[in-house]
Image 1: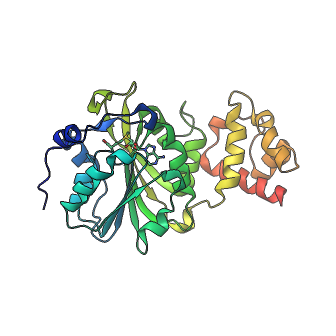
Image 2: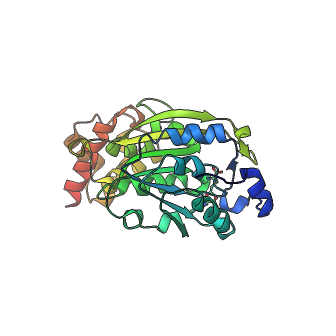
Length: 282
Ligand code: SAM
C-alpha cells in the first residue's frame, strides 16, 4: 500500500514552495490531517472529493480511508506530479482534475453514489465554494469536512443573536446541520497564515426539512444584513424593491415585527421572508 516518501521530502524533491496567490498554507502534521480525515466517517460506499490537495498532506489519510473512488481538484499545476505519485501508492481509483473548483461539475466527476467533500480550503474561495455546494441540486454530498479560517467557521455555525450570525449561518441552516469539529492554530500550517483555522462538519438535513429557494434566501439575507444595525423595515428595502414590493408587506406576510433587527430573526423567519419575497416577485 503506502510506500510514499515523507511529505516534506516530496515537497523538497519537487521544489514546491507555497504560492500566496493560490492561498497556499500546507498541513504537514500527519496527526492533524489524519484527525481531519477521520471526520469523514465511513466512506467505503462513497466517493471522496478533495479540493485543493496541494502537496497531498490531507490526500494521504483520505485515500487511506478506502473510498470507492477519490477525485482531487487542484488549480496549481505544479502539484500534479506529486499527486500522481500519491495516488499510485493506494488501491483506490484516483482522478486528478487540474482546474478551478468553482467551475468544476463535481456531480459529473463522481458519477453515481453519494460523495463526501473534504478540504483545507483556500481562504479566498472558501465562502463561494461553500455556497456553491449548499446550492447543489440534487444534493450529491452526504457530508462535508471543511477547514476555513476560524472567523468564517464561526459565521457558518453561528446561532441566532450572536455577533457572527448572518447570511452564511442562514444559508447553511437551510440545507445542513453544521458543527465546529476542530480548531487549528495558525502555527499548524506551513507557512503559517495570519489567522487561526477551524474545521466545520456539515451533514445535510432530511430532504423534507430543507429550504430549497436559496436564491431568494440570498437576496433577503444580503439586504437584511447589509445594514445589520437598522431595523428590518429599513434594511429590507433593497430586496423588497427587487420584487416590486415594500419591506412592510414582506414582513407582514412573513409574520415578522418590522421594528426587529436582522440578527434577532432565526433561520425559519428568514425562510418565511424568502417565501414572501418569491411570492411577491412572482
Ligand atoms: N490541502 C493542502 C494542505 O492541506 O496542505 C493545501 C491546502 S491550501 C490552503 C489550498 C490549496 O487549494 C492549494 O493547493 C491551492 O493551490 C488550491 N487552490 C486555490 N484555489 C483553488 C481553486 N479555485 N480550485 C482548486 N484549487 C485551488
